[in-house]
Image (cartoon, rainbow, N blue to C red; front, side, top):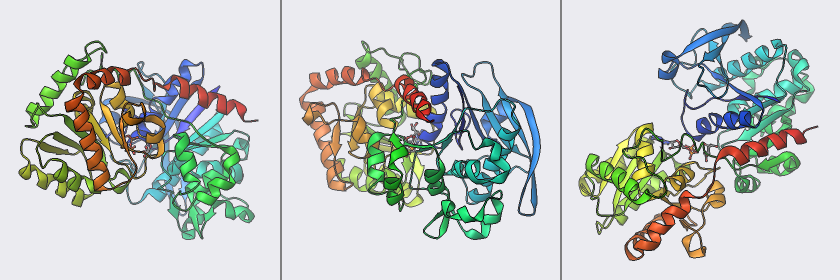
Length: 468
Ligand code: ADP
Ligand code: GLC
């Protein structure tokens, strides 16, 4: 079974968020099940690509309106790689060193057309094309409708929605950039009078998945305008919970950690990582340590955080460290708190992969007050590292975290409000202080929860096989 994943991100080549982690792990675990799974993505000029070698396997050029875009398809030369990674290297360097930007319509149209042009030339074609998010949303449409790609129209295309908030909208003035098709079918591109890449994918893909079962149900009620479409297409839609790469996220071998630890040594291992964090960020190590790791955007409930932290720290009974970046106003609000609570609060504004691993290991609690969370990987990393998640019950968080009150292991709240998050933090703090032996036991319990990719990779393979 040959599968090609088409994605804007893939860890460790280029990562903005969880999409990269998923595309960087799913093919590896599909290959272990005997598949031949690979990835194709844009060639960004970043530190990964400058430090690796590539082989040119295809050279061509495509036209978008009146402009020529010569491109190569490259293959990563790396014996250690668990799956092949291919790249569309556009020669005028529209991909630069960042993944997303304001000219994404053209950047991702060029990427998708180049992928399809290349696939057309392959003697051995993939059995399945697996597209991720709206950046690849026109592939299901082009495969089905564009005259040029008629030879690909028997290959099932699967679309996975990691985030339905972003849909790849663009106006009809760009219609001529899409390879020719029968204009009678133009409605397949349309949603509310505008071209909508994600809607086109939902209409044309052979199967549509979301990254957790609960998120699929939520989308039928609220999908930033696409809820009716998802309800209508529900027969081909299914939610498959993401996994985590338990080899990368392994407390015993994670080379980023200050001290590695087994389940048996979880208390001392976490203590060593916590002490390093508290020293580095000048935090009171005798208090329970709460962390937030993530994009500082509305979807993550990040605009609540300055007020939540301000309220929760009044008694200076906890320590908080934040790692993230995003909206400037939120960043400023978070920075300002540093002077108010110098020994109980700190923030690292930016992206830091190593630090994130140390925080999952050293923290006592991880906060995720998400407004929207299609799956969420942070809570699964936290569980594996013995850190108790405090989450808003939504999307994949609802599928993966049960409240301690209900016989579970985490802290859940229902609303995205300062009061709800503060209350959950207080409950967690009381649990830490008043039930220390339960708290320690719970660490071991959560480390035993298995969210590794094996099961979900298998579910995807079984899903492909249901396509006739
Ligand atoms: P999303 O993709 O919506 O941002 P996920 O929970 O799926 O959310 O995945 C987020 C991923 O990005 C996790 O691997 C998390 O550790 C990582 N991450 C987010 N922000 C940062 C940051 N500032 N520094 C390091 N890693 C980060
Ligand atoms: C998106 C979602 C996140 C999910 C990730 C990987 O970025 O926001 O919840 O975990 O994709 O599927």
